[in-house]
Image (cartoon, rainbow, N blue to C red; front, side, top):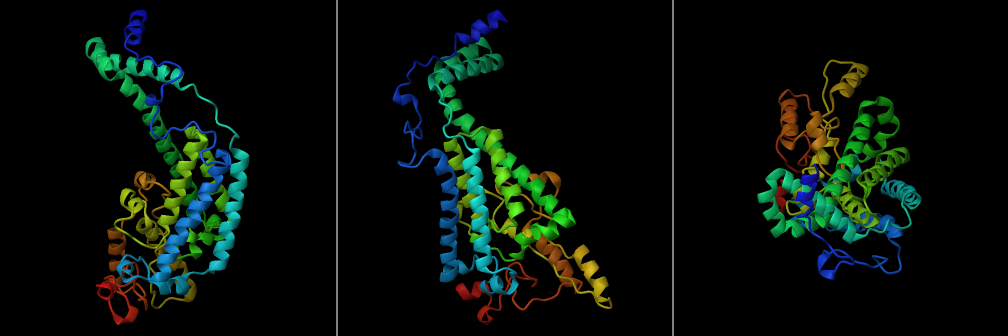
Length: 376
């Protein structure tokens, strides 16, 4: 044991204290405040608010402009927002602002005033010993020693400045996704929770960007606020890491509810959990039940109406939890289920047939033309 320790320690890189500027990555700054005049603690709770309304405003402007070049990417027709949603815009805005007030208060209370100060040189030396130990254990003294002599310093710096933060981000996303999957699925499978709490969110059958956080206050606190606190704590994020993590989380949440399936949207391109994926979760297949009493029809409707409502629970980052538990539904699977109902004459036809409505092919009654024909 002593010989092995001596052998790998000999190849561990050494970092002097203080570190020269060249040892720091481009993102590092020694400023006490990342934004002058605002402490990092308060910045971390303000950034998600700013991101939410900035991205929401962007998509709201697109909704109002109705540019032909973008209309082809709508998931639902504009008319459906008013004809199918069961909550007013004013009610949505008030509920979102109330939830954000609670989130802000929780964030101010939860976060520390100052992050612990790290001795980067000491930490790099500690990581260097771990890297050397792992390399020597895997590759042996000869090959491992050669690797450490040539690349040990670069490898250690990468692990410390990039590898660990990336792992923290991935773990935070995993924890947040897992928490929200568990809470979201429970809210659908426990009838009391759905009727009294989660049904609020599904009043927006046709989602739009600034309705992304439209929830019952209890759900907003448990699902979003507590989930964020749990992910932040278990991943050990610093305040500045939290600023970036929750900025992206917020932007992605808004994007997932934006109502557009843009092929060039980086968030929708990089993540399978996107606007179209989430829209499937909101889909119903309304069934026709001939020769049945109203009560019988309603019971059968409640038991078998759901197309995507009990699928695609994952949010906000990845779809891994849906895949693992078998609750993922793709657009192809949804359309196959819909076509099957149409073939059996069970699906009730719709006056307005958008890409996710009840026509066998995506068509629109807008101006009497198919949506693709209208914009091309």
